[in-house]
Image: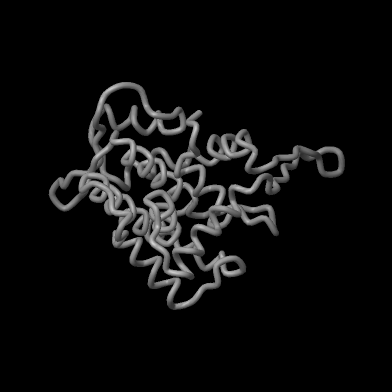
Length: 222
């Protein structure tokens, strides 16, 4: 387990809604988590986007083991051959919710309680634990409400949430309005200002976010 939480961990934690104990955007969650894994690999210098005719493919770069077990399946798959971004999202995304949730619980950021309804039917209740989610919301608010310059990790997370269309569901914590929409769309479109990363990472992130938008709005949902 990485010492610092991955972007995919923070994305799931932010999407958790404490009042209801649910995760926002469940019907597009696997696209968002898949995009977050590619973001983690891009920031680690282990994947890179490349143009291939009308499509954008992602290929593995660098040597050695994956930087974290959560991103290892994606890196292993891409090490075999470059793949279209949407194909990668559809391949790795559906398998991420459980392992990422397990990781966030293991870090102590969420608490999971197992029980039974009527003494027969298994049920799981998830509740907030720790302060990390509050810190993430504070950092996102500073960017979206106050107009502060984001760091690369929170910029990537906000961009993915914006691409998936889930940001309006944060209205109670980050009041939704035209300014928030505009700032989120700017991050979604790669305008990260001082948080801009290397050209290779920026190119990969742009491809990931663009295809997360397409996947979340066009492709079949499960």
